[in-house]
Structures are given as C-alpha cells and as structure tokens.
Image 1 (cartoon, rainbow, N blue to C red):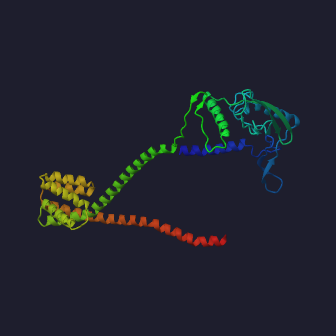
Image 2: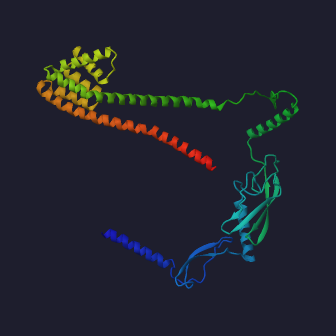
Image 3: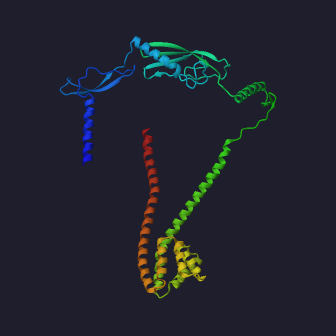
Length: 398
C-alpha cells in the first residue's frame, strides 16, 4: 500500500510541476518566431474574450525575416562553413580528386544555396567529378554559390582545382594498354575479327576468356542438396516411426485381449505367445498386412526358441517396442512369471480395459487430425467460389 500511495503521489506531483512550469494560465502578450528564416511555428492557445467561453485556437507565427545586416551576417557564416563542408573525401579545395558534397540548404541558418560550375563537364553543379582525362597539373574551376534567405541574395565564388585520380602502377599500365587496344581496334574496323597484339612494350601476351563465376556455386548447391536430402531422410524416418507407433498402439488392445483369453484357458504365457505369433505368421503368409507389434512378438518367440531366457526376451521386447504400454506389458509378464497365471490373468484383464480406452482416445485424435486436414481443401474451395462470385461484379463495375 505504501508503494502504491507513493506512485499516486508522484503522479500528482509531476502533473502539478509540469502544469506550473508550462506557463498555463499566464497572460501572453507575444509568441516567439523561429530563429530560422523560412520556418513557421504553431501554438495551441486559449483565447478569452471572443465569446462567453474560452476558445482553443491554433495561432501561427510567420517566418522570421532577416534584415539586410542580419542576412549579410548569415551569408558570411555560411560562406565560412562551405570551404570545409563541401570537401567530401578530399583534403583541400586545391586538390580535388573525388566528388564534392555541395550542400543545398543550411538548416541552422535557413539559407538555401544554388550551385553553378564554370566547367560542368569536369565538375557539375551537384559536385560530381569527371577527372579521368585530366593531366597531372589538373584544372582550376570556379564554383558559384548563389545564396538566398527568401528575400536577400548573395553570390560567392569558390576556386577549386580538380586533379586526376591517384592510380597505382598496375592500374596505369592497364589504362595505357586499353588505350593501345582502342587504337588497334580503330585500325582494324574493316576486318571480320579484332586481332589482339602478341606483345606490348616488349612483353609476351596471351589471352583467355574470364572463367564463368556461376560454376563456383555448384559445390555449395551440392552440399545444400546433401543437407536437404539428409533432413528429408530424417523427416521420412520420423514419419515412418510415427506410423509404426500409431499402428502398434492400435494393435495393443488386440494383443492384450488374446493373451488374456489364452492364459484364461489355462495356457502359459509362453504358449499363448507362441499361439499368437503362429496365427500372425499364417495370416502374413497368405498375403496379410505386416504389423509391427506382431513382428516384435515374432522376433521374441524365435529368440526363445534359440534358448534365450524368458525374462531377457520379454525385456528386449518392451525395449524394441519403445512405447509405454508395451514396456508395461513386458514388466507385468516378468513380474508375474513366477507368481502363477491366476494373478497375471487379473492384471491382464485390467490392462485390457485400459488399452481399449486408450484405443478410443487414439481413434478420436485421428478423427480430429483428419478433420483439420480437410479444412485446407475446404478453404481453397471457398476462395475459388469467392473469386467466381466477385470477378463478374468487378468486371461489370470496371
């Protein structure tokens, strides 16, 4: 409660403080203009006296106009900034090798700037430099900066020396060689082929087409395909395991029921197991479907035939099946193997009832999944019907 009271009090205190310092309720004689020329400012102000009730109006203070002296002062400030602000990546205006950054607006002073170049083919009005054909001495160029605040104007001239780009010896050699090739191409204009020179400045030359870089992606595609195939294999295996587990869960109540009937008729667990396996193998030999749970029972039966201990065989059966009901069945058989058939028969009866309930739940779940899958074609059909209904109406409207 103390913390809650503190928050409530803090809220009221903050509101009161902000209300006091915001100046609400003070009589206003004037509203300030923006310090930047060309910019208007709006204020939400309550006016008393126009009507019986106070009126909330939006009052706009027009743009700030500079006097002649103020404009000259602002222009001089911008002029002093330009020498450094337009350099871009260049070190100075006497050594311009890359594009300049010609600003068109001084935001803090409200001054617009329009540029013009003496030689736009080398340095245009946007600061782009075309200096590849220049000699080492460069080219001096006058830039004109026409400034205005909306009323006053002033023009300044800035001298810029544009120099050729700095290139390495390797780049210079390539550039000279390309110029030589261009000359040879012009000499061979009337031939069917352009014969490349065998030598250049005493060096033997040979030529090959550039290797197709797109081939380099093929190893990566191969690796990606291998990964995708591996993931697909894992997904397929997971789907197969899911189908197998589902089939085994469906067969579990039937297996428990048969064991309960055979043991109730006086047969031992081993004889009951053997009877179930032989009935299954007989059905399979006549073209019956492979059932995974019965296959595991068949494997356990043949292990017993080869001399494996019953406890070990039933334990491996539960582990191979992996599912909780089969592990529980293996435990029941092992637990009651030495205690007599009567106790086991009662436990199997209880397990059979529980297994049939689980089978009902599984059938209900499968039905819900099937219904969900049917929603996809249902929505697709609905979309087609909506298109068929809306398309004629849209065509008629157009």
